[in-house]
Image: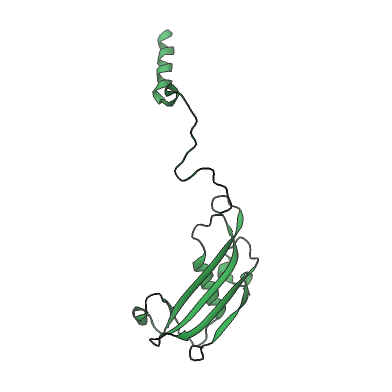
Length: 160
């Protein structure tokens, strides 16, 4: 595919990606992808992948499902052994190929898994207060002091 500078584009159902579908709240939808095999100016073989999908995740704040738009673009340097990883140019991720056949859907699935947030949180929630702000009710100095309640108890005991 590298020698022929082959490219592929299409869609694949999320439900048919076994590893990814186990991470999703719902398996609705599909991933759109573009994959291009080529060599760079140093003759390094690579595959460039662009993947987009709307993945249903479970918000860890509300525990409700929500659609997370995912876009991932990667350039993978094709290497035959782990020793070759050190020779990869900057900006390349290693892609170890030990067989001649590569399942394109596995590449798409890997990229989607890497693009998912570690802690899914829905962005649709309205946040009333900024970071570090806490709503404060006005209280008197006596009410604020934890010792004010003790002083009140002490004065009640001295009356008895």
